[in-house]
Length: 109
Image (cartoon, rainbow, N blue to C red; front, side):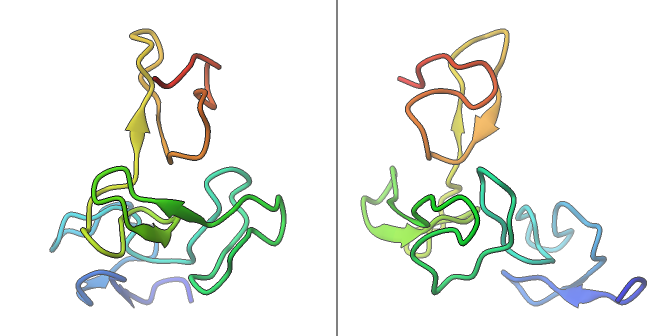
């Protein structure tokens, strides 16, 4: 409900629903539903694929190489699951879901 604080999904501190970063633990997207990084459809941790676009919601963490749910952080090593476009004019951050940047189309490697 609007106006009611929600527990941060990472540290349980109370945060505003509109907060993009938890003021206590510093992690991004502390409240609200998890969303597909491609189509932004709500997702759930137990799902294997997005119910809207069909993308796999399981990936190998680029840091610890364990299989994890495609969210903001790895379930095992807690590393942020984001890669940065190497194009200096772009620099967009995205989930590691494609070999190309979703913003400019440049190869991510």
